[in-house]
Structure formats: C-alpha cells, structure tokens
Length: 439
Image (cartoon, rainbow, N blue to C red; front, side, top):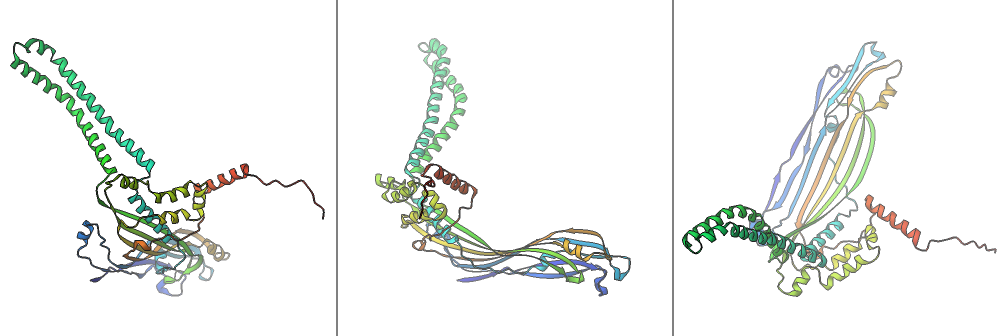
C-alpha cells in the first residue's frame, strides 16, 4: 500500500525600507515589503505492516521511498546611509533597508547532476563491512585479542585467589587463641567462636571480591564473544561527493520598496550526492577448526588482498586508483548477506551572502553629492533541496567501479613527497654524461 505525506511549509520574510529621495511619496516613509517562500516537502512510500517481525527474524523490511525536502535559513541584514543629494537641496537624506534581504532575493535551487564517486566509495565501504562482519579480525589480531582476553581473565582470578588466601590466613591467625583454649575441651564453644571470627573477617574481604568477580565475568563474556553463537549483524557503508556548480559575485540595487541601495551579492551553488548501503549479515557459530580459522581470516581467499597489501608501495597506488577496493570486493563472500537496501540522496544548496557595495558608495557619492554616514551588517541565506530515494538492493550487483582520484589530504601528500624524495636520493638518480658528441 502506497501512502503520500505532504508537510510543505511556508517561509515568510519581511524587509523594511525607506528612501527620502524617491519620487513616490509612499517610499519616502518607512514601510514594510513582505513575501513568502514555499518549501516543498513530500514523501511517497510503501507501508510494511510486518516490519517488526521481519526485523526480529533478520529479514529485510525495506520498502520503496521517494521524497523531496526543502529547507531555508537566513540571517537578517541592514544598510542605512545618510547623504546630501544636490538636486534636493542641502538637507540630509536617507536610504535604508533592513530585515530578510538575502532571503527575499533568493529562490529555489535545483539539483544539477555531475560525475560522482559516491557510488564507488559506498560500494567499497559496504563490501569492506561485509568482510569485517564475516572475517571478524585478521589472524594476528585475533591471537593478540585472545592473549589480552586471557590476561583479563587471569589477573582478576589471581587477585581473587590471593585475596581468598589472605582471608583464610587472617582467620587462622585470629583463631589461634580460640583453638588452644576450646578446641579439645569445649568443641561447641570452639565452633561458635570460629563462626564469629570468620563472619567478622568475611565483611572485610568480601566487598573487595565483588569487583574481581565482575571483572572475571566480563573477561568470560569477552572470551565467549570471540566464538559467538549464531546472530545477525547490521552493517553499513556510505560514500559522499560534491561539486561546485556555479559561483558569482554581482552588484545590483535593492529595488524592493524603492530603496535604491546597491548590494554586493556572493552566491554559490553546490551539488551533493550521498549513497549509503545498509544490510544484515548472518554470523554463524564456528563449530570446526576450519570454521574458526575462516572466521578469523585464515582462508585462501584472504591471500590475494594480503599479497596486494604486502607489495611495495601498493598503498601509494591506492592513493590514486582504487585497485585495493576492487581486489577486496572480488573475495567477499556474499552468501551470508540476508538483506540490503540502498539510500540515495541528491542535494543542491544555494548559499548567498550580501552586504552594501562599498565601491558603489565611492562612485555614487562624489562632489557635489556627499556621503555623511554608513551603517550596515551582512546578511546570509541558504536554500537546500534534497531528493531522497530508498530501495531494496541486490548484494550481487554491488561492485566498486575503477576510479582515479587525487590524494587531497595533507598526510597523503606528505607521504608522497617523502617517498619521492627518498627515491630521488637512493634509486639510480640520473646523471648527465660529461661526454660531448659531434655529428
């Protein structure tokens, strides 16, 4: 069953204006100009009445969903100038405007498609998450974690054993007088005294045993988690990319309400694309030695990615080409993936800032016109439009595409520079020959 939900909102904006030199008398006094922006918000999707049961059983409960969401935010600005305008005599004149100036001048932005790497990034990260869920950790990591877990179990157990030994020794020391006095002659009196001594010492030691017992229980749970029982693991992997579509800086007058003040407007339009895969992996209990080895990375399929990672400078190649992601995707076991969904968000945003144009002031108010004062503050507006699509995915259709990129992070650039410097110093640097040849 398909349902539609509409939550469209309206954004009202107001600008207060005055221009004492305007030919229209209505604009010579402070008045308000208002407008309304329509923010379309609509969602169309299918209903799944049995979603709770499917989630509890580890099955996919995803339904089709399409939606549009618009949002608008802004900061108010103001501009007020006083001047002497020669055609009107020598009196002081005013032009002013304040309020939602940037918001009033903006309009709805539309998404512009571009060549995006979001799909490649999302697919490679999702497949890596599948490998992480199926192959919990690599072999050496597993051995290291097992060693730490056994230490977690051994240390509190040793401390508990030592504390119990101290408790018994303390009871034995306190009971020496009672033993010599009543052990043979008054056995009942001896038992009562021993019970009092043991009970008094018990309170002193037992409160220190409780944290040790909790530590032992926590270590046991950590050990059991290494060989967990059957369960479903939720995984996720996403990718994002963006592109600057347009950028402009223009100066134009605010003709609204007759206020002829020129504003300098900086505007940028940016397109974003975000893709996220979500899914479930059935984690089965490891019952045999081979199963346990496979769970922790000791499988022939892991040799290929490991061999690539062990190649000299393979990480440098991955800075520019995602060969490592493609190799890892080829060895992912997809048979244990129980469900997959794909969310695709295309977002466009228009960012605008505006302030009074100082160059216009310098050009306009020259002799015989005189600028007396300027009072202004910048404004800001951001219109965002998101187009959302969610659908059931197919894990067998998820493959990272070959992409070429530039190592944009500072750390990667420093690594490249260091490697190139090392190569230039140690690997057969070219030397010009001193010979001269004559044709």
